[in-house]
Image (cartoon, rainbow, N blue to C red; front, side, top):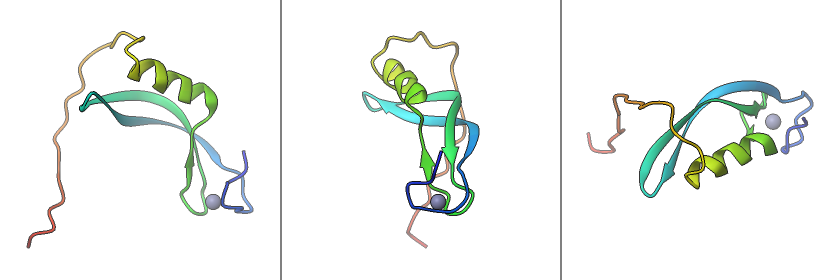
Length: 78
Ligand SMILES: [Zn+2]
């Protein structure tokens, strides 16, 4: 897949954990295939992954577990 920003190198396929929000609640999808441009860092999601995300956000997929993680919010105050 070619980078939409016109970079010369092809985008690399990666499996990543992505956080999305459904009804204000965060949901994590692991092993989601995305393409990342090694030049500019642009991410692109193939249609197959977009469908998975859509199904998850529509509640069509049962969760396989709970994901908990520490949250770090970067504050602009001092
Ligand atoms: Zn690029």
